[in-house]
Image 1 (cartoon, helix red, strand yellow):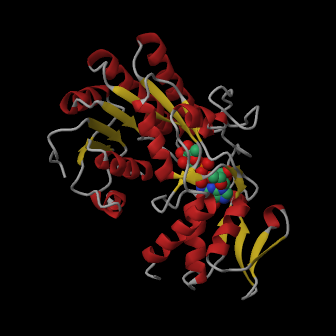
Image 2 (cartoon, rainbow, N blue to C red):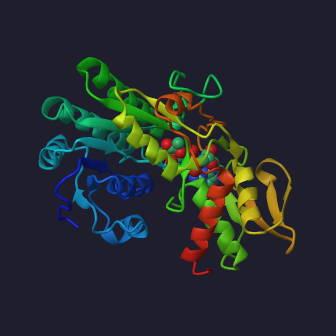
Length: 350
Ligand code: F7E
């Protein structure tokens, strides 16, 4: 990497290219003939960061640059060097749970970095189109269900507060300066590339390993009643691209429109593994027992509860469906099956 590939085609810059969405988006854009550059944050080694690009067969097909996006001058050099037609700003501190432990760092990564990019676009690259990765988490304790582009934000985590700031800054640059800046308000989206700090990948990994006898202890989870609108990341990156191809800039919700609880996600994963589960007890005493062995495979640990929890989020993506012709193709049971199959390969079980 570090070398530029291809000499024609539009230029895209993806911040956070080694993330789940970065890898899926890079793959989509390369297929469409883009020249793709991606940023990595300083620190860490390529060894532990490049696995998603390698899994997607992208290593060597994209240019990567290490840059601190909270440094305004570095952002200016980045855009001058790569002169992108489109910027997909995906880089962020993305774990809601850990944002409670590092609120200031989260704010810098999510809000300050976005402002730096917008300001360089305004002053030096006003024709560049800008996508900001907004999130359903901004709705927090939402006043209405389902949530649309017009729903009020009531953020309930440092992550969400920082994303609201970045979202509104993006909107402001569109209104104040007439720039092509869009916010994609994406509801939870998962894939075999999801990191185990998120509940879906944790459940899939935990149950695959438990069934294979690789875990002695049951898997501890937090709130089993939390409900989310889960979709497939590969579907959602198509929506990101469509937002930047639209005639004019706007904000769009991408969501499946259906919610499932964390408990449901465990049950779907068990189904995909042909495990029969029995849920017993309530609250912190709730457990899932595997019927064939009689052993407890899931427990609840209050240490995993968040200081403020978002109970249910469900999106209405009518605007994206009508104006961008966007529809998700993979439903949750299919997604779970895909994640289980990939995890079995990762664990050397298939
Ligand atoms: O939690 C509950 C947890 O960490 C989902 C990020 O991509 O989507 C993601 O944020 C739910 C929450 O995702 C565990 O309390 C129960 O209610 O997978 P998660 P998230 O917080 O919804 C949004 C749209 C983003 O923008 C974010 O960047 O599951 N939960 N037990 C648990 N969550 C975790 N992580 N671990 C547990 O053991």
